[in-house]
Image (cartoon, rainbow, N blue to C red; front, top):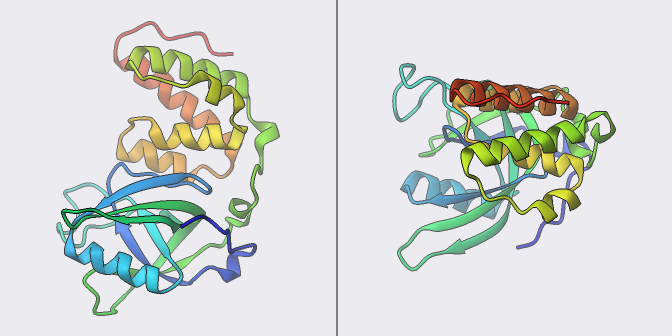
Length: 222
């Protein structure tokens, strides 16, 4: 399945969506998140989504000390994504890719009788999420690339620098936010950043803190 972006207004997005709580997983508008589905309740979720509008909400559970394993307490802000790729493996798993549409805030949980959780959500305040490239001009791209080079070197990450140089700024910021191995609270700070500039600044600050905590030399940021 390819992506035919169907939404130009937040009012077109479904108000009630299935939600997949997954710690450490971050989806952002126009970002792509591959998922390996193997639990029966999430088979049912994917089947229902494909039969409907193909929209699933990604959100992080809060601390493991809250709620119960089957229905943990969730952070209040997540991101709705559309299933843009789907494959079934020989051993019965689903491999899907969600492409981010827009962020949402949880309003209330719906008692729908499904094995997966469904929520009524609000997209208010996130209209810019539907606009490709919104806020790119305000981002200090040089600092972003400098951060990536230092972080990649210290983390021993292999990076395709040619692709980085060619990537639009929005793609660069959101891809880095999704791939960097931060904890749940740090990932949540990135998704809740009000705009792309704030997300880039948050990402740089988190990378600096991570490097400092490793005891390495903190790079000089522009």
